[in-house]
Image (tube, rainbow, N blue to C red; front, side, top):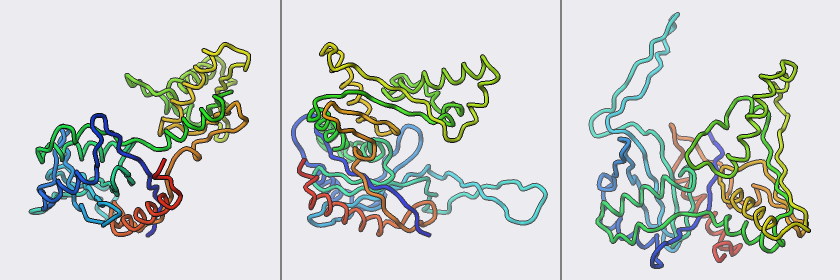
Length: 311
């Protein structure tokens, strides 16, 4: 069965001296040839194994990393006809563990293409950080982040467009009524802070007036925040609006927004993200690594041809 997935392009950004992520991965791989040598254990008890770190020549190195919990069982659904079914457990056999999830990456120099690596490629970043420490590499090797090149594109477009005229942020009523924006994180993103009042307003209307409760059943309705400052307004106000837009552009989870520039152009989420939709074969609760590798190699070639890697 084929499924659709997104592969995303990012770049390693070094905080200290300029370095080369691919070169570091190659060196560690040469010292840790066996997959069991490339296992790192995280504080929550989960483990990640570098199941494959393979040489792709001038295109870099390909990584397939598997996440599991040592000797964790899987739930089994008995399929014999019965009025009530009791779930059972099955434990892994000798020299094996059950796969929880996995992620993939192609690293060429400081260019990084990922699949299923989480927000900001956090899973890949955490694994490499721990792997470099396990291999007793210099501390400077861990002083990097993995950022979206799209962030740079968005900031450049805002600057080239003369700044931001207005920002529109939409939230489906269905989402608001479901209370999906209840994340009380210590450091909410700009989008979370802007969306939260919409949810609170809908909930207060429903509680205050029974007639308004029907609005919460909408499957197509939209609640909208629009922020703008007149062109004649103070420069500090206009630059403040630029700052809001820049944070929205940098938020990987931000959707359903439009940023209008003073040049008349607009920026939408699909135009910011540097990613590609691919079709791959599902295999158990993962996808075929060989197909992912070929899609990533093809995407890297496309990015180079479009000179995206030179930005």
